[in-house]
Image (cartoon, rainbow, N blue to C red):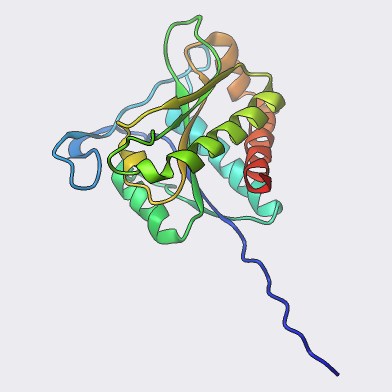
Length: 214
């Protein structure tokens, strides 16, 4: 009999960073490797204008559900926190995990009329992770398209941001998904609802599938 070895393609490892934490951390850290500019390690985050749910609670709930969904789809998943860590440490944890991409989950705050989801990604001029810009943009576009299709939330588009510590320390394609505005009563209630969260998770997972199919 002739034996042949079949190469099994390794699972893609998805890094998930649930934004913020219960208590902010005003201690300073470098905005990127070797940077002289420093910023607070963890901002406090926003909260729901109607539900009064804190951003760190919403992002953790979505992250846990997203992990379950991605594992069901055949991915491996690493989470940056189930406890209080700081941003740079979160990025370093993803780097060490062997993750292929990193999705940082956040929710927006602003005027009560502001609404929609956006993807924040590093520009090609970013002095720390400029080489990750193209793939990060692709990740942002893939996830936003699927997320907004699944949820009906307005697509505000992909936005270049080079001042985010958790992005600037990353070694893999990375985005911040601003899932919606917690300061908008309708979006706040939607993101807190069971049906809303189910659609949000499906949309993000569909976006991950789309990213790898392109």
